Structure formats: C-alpha cells, structure tokens
Image (tube, rainbow, N blue to C red; front, side):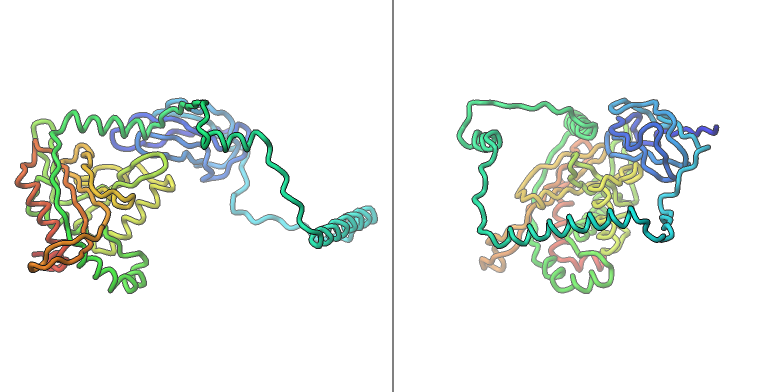
Length: 383
C-alpha cells in the first residue's frame, strides 16, 4: 500500500499559518489528479489543496477550523487504488433487445405520462384559482420589521482571517506611519474623449476594455520618476528606493479588500495594464489569487469611485509610503479661459508617509499626475 502525503502549500510572503475552512472530499472517497481536496484561508487569500496523485483519500488529520502551517501534512492518499480520470469518456453500453417484463413496464410508464399530460391540458382551460394565503409565520416574518416590532435580534459571526488581517494591517499603518493626505481634482474630459474615440478599436485589437486604470497607472509611473520617494519605503533606519514600480490595485471581494500587485506597471503598455488589471481582479473575485500575486508592491491605487465615493482619505498599505485614491466622476462647473463650463471632474487623494515624503513632494507629485491625466499626450511623449 503506497501512501502519499497531502501537505499545506506555501502561503507566500510573511504568512506562517492558515485556517482549514472546508473539506471537499471525505475519507474513503476516490480522487483523481488535480481534484480539489480542501480549502484553506490565510490572512490574504483563500487557496485550494489539490491531489497530486490519484487514489483513495485514506486519512484526514486536520479538521475544519483547525490552524495549519505551510508544509504540514493534512491527509494521506492511498495510491494503490487508482481513481478514474476526471475527463475519461463514459462507456456506452451496447443496446440490447428489450425483454418482455421491461417492455410491459415501459408501457405502464407511458400510460401514466399520457394521463398526466391530459390533466395538465384540462387544467389550462380552467379559470385560475385564487392564490392560497401564505403560511402565517412567513407573513409575520416579513411584516414585523416594517411595523416596528419590539423584537430585537442580533447575530454573532466569527471574523474570517482576511478581515482580521485587514484590521491588523490598517491599524498598524495608523500606529506606525505619519499619514497625511493631500487633495486635488482632475478634469477627465481628455481621457474620456480618448476612450470614446478608440474604445471599440482598442477592444477589438487587445480583447479588453480601455478603462481609466491604465491612464492612472501611467500617470503615476511618470510622475514618480521625478519624485522617487513616492515609490520608496522605510526599512528600519534605511530608505529603500526602486527603479521599477509594482502597483497594488485594491480589489473589493466578498471576504474583504485584497491588493494584488501589477508587476513592472510603469513599463507596460496601456493594453498590458488593462489586461493585467482585469486578470488580477477576476482572480481576486473568483478566489484564484496565488501568494505571488500579493507579494511586494511599491505603490497602491484604490478606486472608491466605483461605489460612488466623492472624496475619501485612503490608508497606506504597509510598508508602502503612498497610495492614490480615485473617486467618482461628477460633472461640475469649472472656470476655463474666464468662462464657466461644465466638465467631468474627479477628486484625487494622495495619502503618504510624512516620515519619508515631504508635503512639497506629495503635492507636486499629485499635480504632475493631474497634468498627465488632463494632457495624456505628455505621458506618450515622456515629457
């Protein structure tokens, strides 16, 4: 009997444990290669534990809600009993003549079906009957909240690990960094005109929509080249600078906020950025993020505008030193050439660590981002 150990996979940077949240197979079940056996939830993501060998799930060592560590053995597979491959085509039995008992049974079934169909047709011709009242309990349950019932209810639900981790990291950022936020507003007319003009050709060629995120990533990458502290962070008594920009894109999921990282974002084309963002967002919402998708990050962007936020102060994503907050686009009167005109405006917010970044640098960086967005040609010409 050959037993294969099923171990907890690597959880990624700075994560040493996770919670086993479900078993999708039970002891004694047959498993094929790549079958999902269990799910675990770390501080950042939910991961699947899959079978690397076919066989029978012999022993389960860890139960739901147990804490597990990378490399820990959670189950054994007996490979002496090979499972049927998942994609194997079913064997179709050769058709044989019906025996007399089978033929008789078939006739009885057909008779019953015919009778049911006749009753159904008769029911259609009858006038509809009044709908019977719903059970008292169901009606009462719906009415009580509306009528101001005196019954007061509360429900306690354990925090998942992701929610706990979000709270710990954000509170840690408040306790450690000297956070300050500066604001500006950007006229989105030029960006919106470009999108309207080229969005169809862009999607046809690149297979992805031309969104706003690519313009913002490009603008931040160009602006950061003049203000490198924006893309740096403090490590002990040293400042770590980068000649690249890995941008964390905040994505809201059912379990909480995650920030997958778009690598070398400043070097990507607009299409590359949009494709990368779409892929990361899809993986985040489907629970398919891997530990490497969340590692690192030198700068972050969060878009509260998709939920209707007009203005906010984003919190840093440690150890990063700056985060840009996008907001909803709203038509407002603005002055252009001494004339009042209506333009699609967006408030921008840059939260930064004042220990590393001076107010002057933060303000000038945000002004540069505004300029690149209002005149997108500056980024293309590297001005």
